Length: 325
Image 1: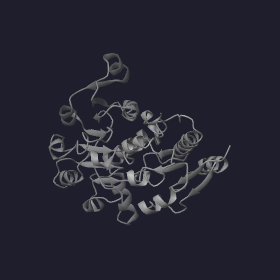
Image 2: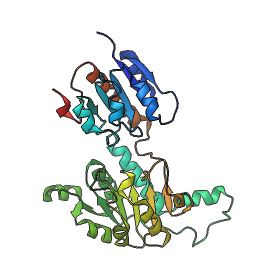
Image 3: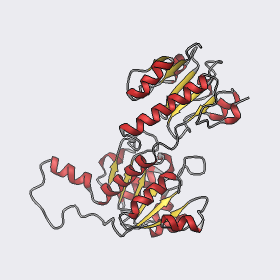
Image 4: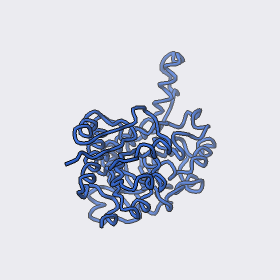
């Protein structure tokens, strides 16, 4: 069988690259940067499969550049960077990498929560600047995590993993989700359901875990932030546009809420300019899945999805089954 031709928009972990090299004629972007649309269009010429990242915007113009393109394999759980409807119309399969980053992202959410609550980054910067001259009773006072209330906006797999971690801190857990769990599920997870406004009012810490779509863009805005406690912290490891970033900055500046832990941003890699200087915002560079093990699993899954589709098989993580036929 002829080896499939695959174009990869950025280098993946070594194990994943080995799979692709062994089973395909691979071309890839060797630079650690996002390719331009023109570069992606040039790259997809005469290939069977495109393996891309969440940072690559794959629109109909790119899909139309190669009438023989079989698959767009996304190195991500989300796929809002791909025009799935256009791909379906062109009978191009789209795949993602679900289920492999649940615990890693939950760890990151809790790391941000703890860092913001206990002002870890501020303290680190203070010591590195040579400003620390000994312990003091009022230095960098933060807020307790143990015994506090955690609110979860959205309650999928990652949010449930965060809830399991919160139980270890003896936190009360309230959640809002479009679909409420059964009483038995709530009992087993140790969580209580409330409408979103009430979750925001009750919580000392709020962690956001909804998918990004037209309904959830700016789900958390100025009104929602105003419902939160002045001592509250908000954490976002989901998608940046779910929170109105300008409204969040204003809430942090005027004391509407105490702090934020952010791993995603509304227009990343750009941030609201004020965030760079705000000591009460912990800002991470989209590290949610950034462990060797998780990124390797993601890369292997994306490679297998792409290779299967190129062979004419139904890939294991197909997001548009209606494209077949």
